[in-house]
Image (cartoon, rainbow, N blue to C red; front, side, top):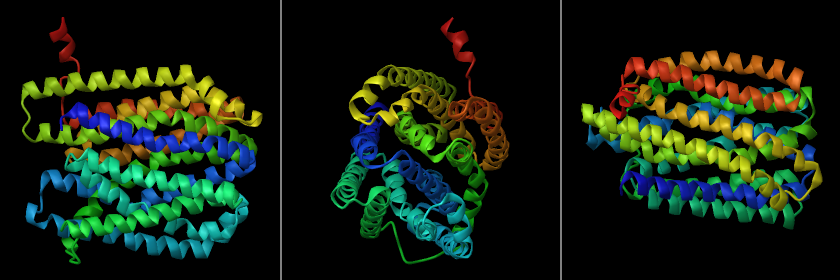
Amino acid sequence: MNLWKSMSVYTISNLSRQAIGFVLLPVFTAYLSTGQNGDLTTITSIVTLLGSFMILSAPGAINLEYFRQDQGKENFSTYISSALVNPLILFLVLTLLSFLFGSILADWLEIPVRWIYAIPLLALTTLLPQVLSIIYQARSQPLHYAAYNLSMTTLDLLFSILLIVGLSMNWEGRIIGNFGTKALFGLIAFFLLYRSGLFRFKLNWSYSKDAFFFGLPLILHILSVNVMDLSDQLFIREMVGREELGVYSIGYKVGMIILILQAAIVMAWQPFLYGKLKEITPKKKIEIVRLSYLIMAGLVVAGGLLYLISPLIFKYFVLTPEYQGGVKYVGIVALAYVFLGWYKMFSSYIIYTKNNKYLSYIAVFNIIFNLLLNYFLIKNYGTMGAAYATVISYFSFFVITAIVSQQVYPMPWFAIFKRIK
């Protein structure tokens, strides 16, 4: 399947996954108060943040090993099982820490402590679905990817509606529904990997070490994106209020359509890019640059369209007046995720060359920069300041990464304009 067909399938699949957010918007706004929605947003963001740390980029290491075959093609299944050891060890460590310090965090956030204890387990359930999805991505099997992920999305949607509406479990019903679905599909992923011979009960500690040192520099890189997503929410919760966080989160969910779109594009783009880079020629470099500009422009158009139709989305999907104020955040959040998509296209070169340490340096700068922006902009502009901080942070993320990627893997980004002339 060629690049554009693969990209179309990934886009349709991921946007269909995002459709769960639209279907649940009326449920969230009708059955959850703004404060309860703020609690839900806080828990899911913490799970995402710790999950990115705990998983330690194991799926990314597996993905790159598939293309580079540094350990040999015949050892790929052993590499997968060995790479998964690292997240399991971190899961045990985080579980211990959650029981030691969970009550302190629960008191601060005013959330039942049982959910703090459950966070490591909630995060772990995302591991195997990610691994299977990235295998499908690496093998250029978007139809398999779509079938697996759409089935998971459908069940997640049904469970959530049943628990929130049918059993009146408020925001906890959404967490339980999502956790149950991920756990079930994690088991399905394990079965499919084992049956296909891609998972073996065999460990090679040198492979675990390779995956660990691949993921270690990326921890800050991945955390930086999740810190930016979580920090604005925590700042709003503390400086403005959990009710306003609930309103902001609805606008954020709509803006995140661009996040889903660019993630789908990158899923198709990375296997294409890595395949080209493996046998690169000057002609292929020009082809890559032209396609890159085309994709980047497409993301801008998509962000603009989302901004234009966002009032209609709120009119027909957000039925409670208290949440209507969230529409003003959509355009800024969408633009932020356009810049994140641009950043991912350039970071792929850094990852391919295994210069991940540079992504760590960029991440440290961006985390500090984002925290400072959130504090001062929210202090001066209220909740809108959080949206401003997000878009400025992602733009800086993109610019710095583009400069570094050009140093580690030069591409004719400007020469192409001379050719056009």
